[in-house]
Amino acid sequence: GVRSVAWSPDGDSLASGGWDALTKVWDAVRGVELVRLKGHRGAVFDVAWGPDNVRLATAGGDRSVRIWDSITATEVTRLRGHNDYVDAVTWSPDGKRLVSASFDNSVRIWDPDTGKETFVLPDSQGMFHSISWSPDGTRIAAACSDGQVWIWDATQGNEQASALRSPP
Image 1 (cartoon, rainbow, N blue to C red):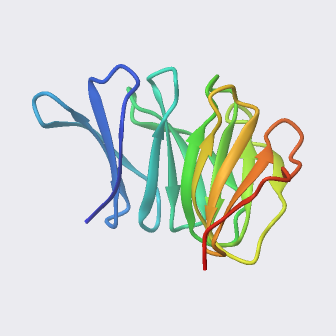
Image 2 (tube, one colour):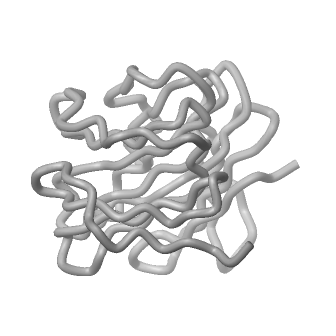
Image 3 (cartoon, rainbow, N blue to C red):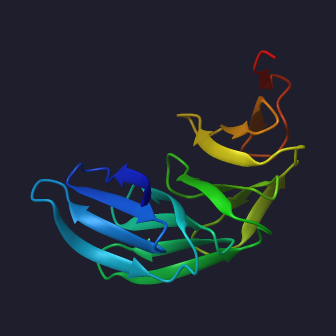
């Protein structure tokens, strides 16, 4: 099955990731597979295009985040640090950072060029499943199985006072 899809910034391509450990890039108009990215040793839970329309980040069941060149179909960088499935990944608006969320109760910010971890955001009592950068790139929000939406300062890694809680 397909687990995740994402449009390329120019709207011409669609990336998909699935339980078969593959990431595919599709011509969205013709419905033709353009590129097949192999490397994860488990399901691909999320896919995210970089703002440059070339780099593609994938989050996997093998506890890694991978960055691919979608034109040459090559793995550029592998990010390791999570201790469980990586469920979500997304680029900062300027493309200079990446954030990943995992079943290991952590959210991590990465430098996609060096592969180095910049911050490990304070963990919770639940697994993180979805993440989003604010449009100005200064904050990160993450959906958590503990019933909260966690919000952090993306420049310093500090938790914001305004974590949102769902009703009981």
